[in-house]
Length: 379
Ligand code: ASP
Image 1 (cartoon, rainbow, N blue to C red):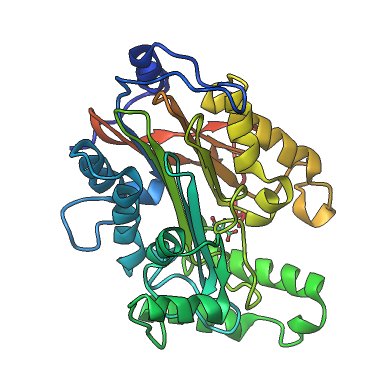
Image 2 (image 1 turned 30 degrees about the horizontal axis):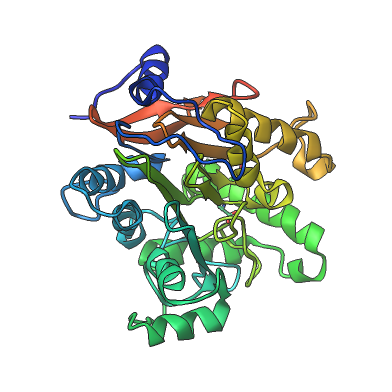
């Protein structure tokens, strides 16, 4: 049974690994890191890593944690975890059944990084493969490259033996797209700003009517883990922004934006408005802040401050002049300290959460927020 904890417990749990390891986080770049022998393994992810089981017995964070503690490679374990969410047709933000682009085509993005091996791989705008994280891992394992996109990514996947399907929509995702299409301004492609506004307006209305899950307009899974030896890996996988312009790629497959890690420091990944992370290379910034010795929470707050400062366009601001979108970070360091941090702490009055699995089992925890109470009705 999942164990619910309060914020004080969370801070305690979050520092346990550090105390066990008896070490600080960040060596200066190029300096040998302290050898860790007793890190308490942790897996952290977006809240959907605690929810979907694809008809099986375990969620993403439980699956990944179990595999890590049985000695499996950390990245293999994390990818096996996110595969559950990718394959579950009920999660309409990731993999099979992810909400499609404006043309009704499901285009998926993913990347992954391996700390000890210092390898990375990603795919963007790939169609027809339910598990883009496994294709990203194949890029990491089998090529000299870090990112393959579009048709090339699909051809690569086919050559690697993946099944290519004609359509990854489910009845649920197709229904949502049809409704969105029916409502949108038919001239929207002529003026990108008008299209953006029209698209947001329609999406908000569909959320109010219960046709779209507000948590999934932006939606993704990021999952990061560390084992007892302090080996850190991470993976992010998504169908990206709902009803996006075909070919639009967000932060999720971009190293440094939707995921970054350094095996000698820690990992950071994100969900939410990808453009904010692309503009600020937030995950890279967070890892560099941890390298300077900052706690995962403080490092992530720094990235959120950067996002806030760099958000100046009126269409992206509330009437209080604050960002009108969400960005969440999932951060852990190699000593096992972790944090889930967001611009806002609630969505439509409900606490925003992240998932974690430790020796105490899987839990959903409240995020720490930069700006306090959240927005309502905001995609
Ligand atoms: N960050 C993803 C993107 O911008 C979407 C999300 O996490 O909601 O594509």
